[in-house]
Length: 285
Image 1 (cartoon, one colour):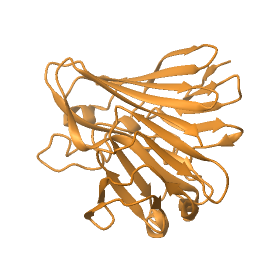
Image 2 (cartoon, helix red, strand yellow):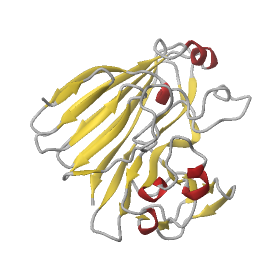
Image 3 (tube, one colour):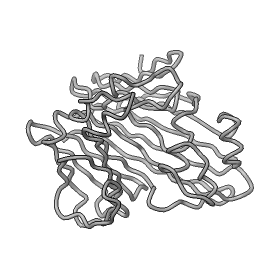
Image 4 (spheres, helix red, strand yellow):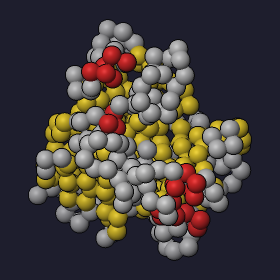
C-alpha cells in the first residue's frame, strides 16, 4: 500500500523500497529511508505523544522563527510558532508510477484558542510530501483566507542523520553573509562550513539553490535543492546545549546536523487573499 494512515501518522512507501513517515502532530516528517538507510535524525529522547514539539525530523516553523520582539504581532507566540505543535489533518494522498504523495492541512480553526488569540488571522496551510525512488520533496503553501494582511516566517527545520558531525561539510553557502547567533555577530562565509563546536547561523539570500552535505569520512551525503526559499539555517548544539535539552541525548550531537531552508531573515507580507509557497527537494550525493 503506497500510503498507510495510522491513528497518529502517515507512512508513505515507494515501490523502490524508499519510505517516509509523517506524524499528524506538527505534520512532522520523522523518517526518510532510501537506499536501505535512514537519512533523518530523530532523538532517542524525542517526545512523540503530542505534548511537545518533536525533537528531530522536519519540524515546520510558522509563523515566526525563534522568538520575535514586541511590538510585532508574533512576539507572544511560542518559540518557532504553532505549526509544529498543532494537530494537522491528512487531506489527500495519491500515487503514480514514480511518486507517492500525501497532503496535510492546518488552518485557523485547528489551532489552539490561545494561539488563535495571540495571532488572530485567517490562514490555510497545505504541506505536501512527495516521495520518489531517490528523492523526497517537502512543500509548504500558505494562503491568507482572511480580509487583512499578515506577516510570517517559515522554515523546514530539517535534522539530518550523519555519520559524524566533525567530519561533514556544508557546501553551497560560501560568499553569503550570515548572523552568528552563538557569537551574536555578523560574518561573511568563506569556503565550506565545517563543524568544530556549537553552530547556530542564519544565512540570508543564499547565492546557490543547491546545498550539499558530503559525509567526507565515508562515501555519500545528502543535498537540498531550494525552491522559493532564500535563507538557510545551520545548527548543531554541540556539548553544552545538548546537555541542557531534556529531549536530546548528551552525545547525539555527533550524529546530526540541521540544515534548514526557509524565509526567516525578514518577514514575508501576505495580502488578503494572497498565497505563497516554498519547498525543498532532498536527494543523495
